[in-house]
Image (tube, rainbow, N blue to C red; front, side, top):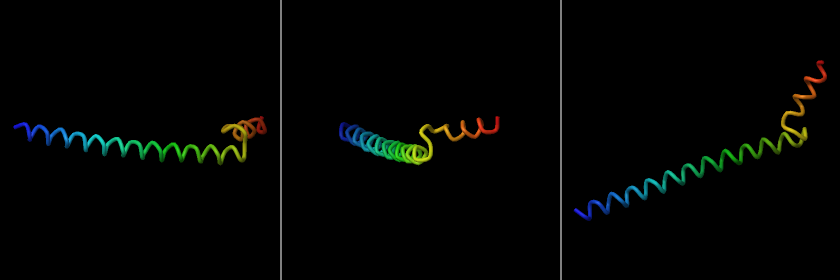
Length: 60
């Protein structure tokens, strides 16, 4: 009986470890993508919405 409970606890730990690894990987990937987008925008404009602001200002 105790061996079965122990195996279930090990299975829970392994599942949780896999889930944490997956979430960490997705979060790191998303952060890297956002950071790359911000770097791309900062090369063309100081603020992310500065280009849009300038276009609206030019039309008015």
